[in-house]
Image (cartoon, rainbow, N blue to C red; front, side):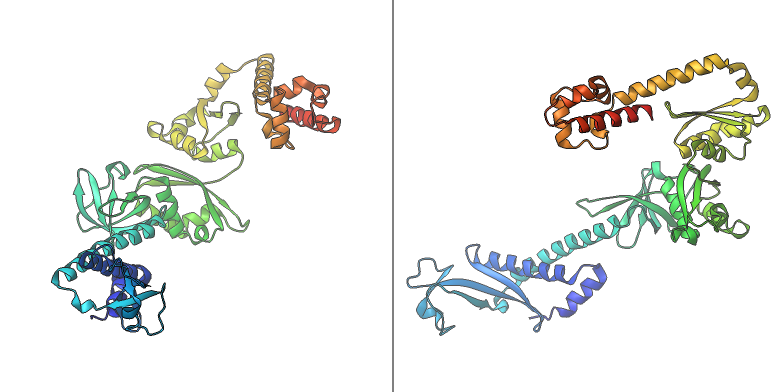
Amino acid sequence: MLNLAHIIEQVEKDKGISRDVIIKVLETAMLKAAEKRFGPNKIIEARYDEDAGEIELFEFKTVVEEVKDPDTEISLEDARRYDPDVEIGDSLGLKIDARSFGRIDAQTVRQIIFQKVREAERDAIYREYIEKKGEIVIGIVQRFERGDIIVDLGKTEAVLPRKEQVKRETYRQGERIRGLVMDVRADVKGPQVILSRTHPGFLVKLFQMEVPEIYEGIVEIKAAAREPGERAKIAVASNNPDVDPVGACVGVKGSRVQAVVQELRGEKIDIIHWSDDPAVLAKNALAPAQINKVIVDKANHSMEVIVPDEQLSLAIGKRGQNVRLAAKLTGWKIDIHTESEAKKLEISPEEALRKEVEARIAEEEARQREPVSILEGIGPKTEAILKDAGIETIGDVLKAGVEGLEKLEGIGKKKAENIYDAAKGFVER
């Protein structure tokens, strides 16, 4: 029979399928062909012989005194012709001569091997690209289908959907193209790799490729926002006080950022310093506009930004682009007003105090509606005791007071005081 060792090695190398999987495929194919030839009732096993480099087939029969089923049983007399030491009840494996397989059997084997290898190849490709999710891959533009670009990645094809393409970018067949692996979907025809060139993650990965400090973790991109093909903003921070994160991303004479801009075909990129303070981050994000004042409304997760009258158009940007990107980058709603508008909107100190008190009351009321489970020291057992007594929120704890809490079975005076103090501290913080 044909030595399979070289074939296994070649398929493993060409298709990227593990040796164990290939051997399993070959064993399955031979077994299916044997079952088709000899019938499904026989007990047949297929094993790969490393030394001979071939698949061996064995038919197993139980040794009995009287044969009732010739497919699965063999008499003691016949069994001892193969093994003199065999006894009643033993299982005897008889090797099947694979040379007895005819042309049809060989064709069955080839069909099964082809099918199983294709399945194994698809699985291998799926596993390879699912691990690349969120990474950049390079391919060749192969063809165009209803606005989508089909990209040849070598082992498989990827799709760059129309919605994931930058509108002003155009490509020709045979051109190299980069894309971020957005998703990998299992499909009957093979895994489908979905690419994107519009996702902010594509921008982040490009900087990671161009800036060693980002790749090494010294500089970190904390946030990114894009209007693909037009403009982008990234906020960066350094984990090393001696390294300027913005300078590291810009590079000598702008070499690093220009490499990214070139890949994005002219998309303008603003690189700003990150800050944990929302007001400072908003100021940085609205650059190059000058900001006079930022009023933060935490309850509504919004900011009111005051700029000099002559800076309004710069802060808002062309068609509102600058403020939109700043809002995306910070994650806050941003309203921009000029100094003149702010003066018109100014309120009296008494009105400002009233609004502040109202906001504080609203915040405390919201905290009182939170479940007791968020309080420190409240475990599942204590939570169940409180719930049975109708105490489900922080407000319920405050209404019950220490006296009401210590009356509950399983809640002593000390524990009642701790629960009440925790609830009071949570509301007043």
